[in-house]
Length: 380
View (cartoon, rainbow, N blue to C red):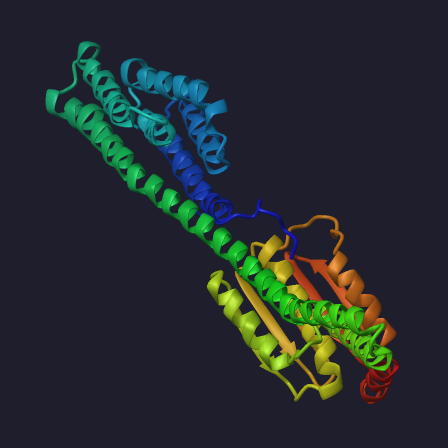
């Protein structure tokens, strides 16, 4: 659950790009080298262009292309020049075909001019082939100018909407994070409102009764004593209600908490699935509702979840969400407090992080939740 903000949608998309396209680029490059190279040193030259293309693609996917942009561009451009002017390898433009568009798409400005420059270079080198060969004019123009320059121009042009797509993904991700933060803020405001309802009215009444008791203490001591007894009872009741609110027990209803959790997750763009294997025990429901509320808050604040599954049994609840990374289990103060309360009522709270998933489960032994929780309420 606590995956931080590193497992972003952009990161997942770029990882998907590597898995889908890196093998394809490597295979196509290897086939071109095998087809076009007639000597071992021609294979080395063409292979350098393929390597430059693959390195650039990997760094582009990792959003770290600036570190390799210049050397890879120089290698790819040199391979195309050697292939067109020296070795006669018409597929030598493969490296510049991949490297050029990827670098151009990441430029902060003047991307149009850069795209034009890459395309012009490919066409100019291909046209220079006419100066060093006696081959037929139309064949040279098609194989070394029109096809390489045209494919480069088209692929470079396609990278612009691709970059815009990533920009939209980033905006949607930021909007989702803001919505999740707003959901947490709304939950805090709801708690603050409940706290104000409990204590605001009480403090106002206490102030008036104490003022009245001060006036009556000399003229009507019995009435003043009665007012003070009422103040004492009112304060005691307020303390009890405040404790219940702090433990999320005031008017707590598991069904209402479940509906609230679904609304919060859906507002944050998270898919929610609820499985009711059995009706939850009425006495265990209050404490399970607290676990659900705390877990919901943690997911919204800390996780990059796409899916959440909530399973309810007669005396237990299990919440599983994805988006967790392989990292040490973080400190969960809210759940740690709940673990003590669940254990104190004869149950067990389990927190696990494994294989990109985070699990929170609370369960009470069958047949014990009713008596243990009932006695816990009587003690209060």
